[in-house]
Image: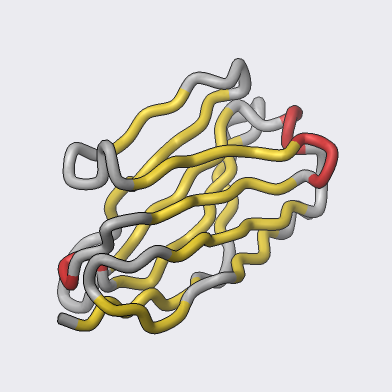
Length: 116
């Protein structure tokens, strides 16, 4: 059973930075993709950033240029570096992994709160 554990959330002022980490229980190279999603109160969960097994990345338009997704294969970890944070980035951030059978796995989520 794949387990994903997020960490690094917290409270930050607008314009600040945070780095989220996601530790996976398995070899992340076995996944088709890994990514970060977020869900704000009263809104649907939305994709933030995804890194494909080959290393290419995709970002939501609202975070492009401010957020960077990366991975450390040796540590089986994926990161989300968030800069120039805005109040509208406030949400619970979830780590996601999709395996070769297209099964999706989710972490428990970590809260990010950006104050104005």
